[in-house]
Length: 224
Image (cartoon, rainbow, N blue to C red; front, side, top):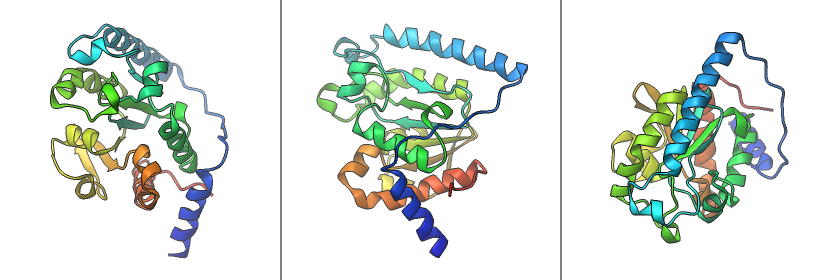
């Protein structure tokens, strides 16, 4: 119990620390070629998303928000939909929720360029409203191909909509989180969206439990 408390306090402290960059080992030639193929696939999908008009959101967006990160990542995060700042920049999780996600990653001993981050929707819903069923269906092709291309060991869904879409289970997030699910042979760990943690700090503890579960699946130790 003492070690669990220590780890949790370390996590909370890390949420306020500056980002630290660590060196990565070089890839071998085979891995480098695979990375190139995946980058090419992602770029092709990105261009398709930029011209997409499969739902009305394509006509109201400033930018499509495709995804960012390592296409060879072991861990993939899937949020729900872009917000205002993401829509302006064309990159997922760049607002306050994104800053919190970066601090959570740092507490896990990871950084943004080691994981892959995407959203269920690639365009911002007006007023940041919840994703609609028709919009999820229209965007599903892109997310499906992203997961297929990255093929991570673990997917962490952020929020109830991304969890329900991936798992095909319409249930409160409180019933979905706390255990490991599967999507096409990939472990899925649902947890709270960082924006929800900003509104409800009490959810930081269960979120950290979910992050510990992810580290265990990745066979990585908790830093510090």
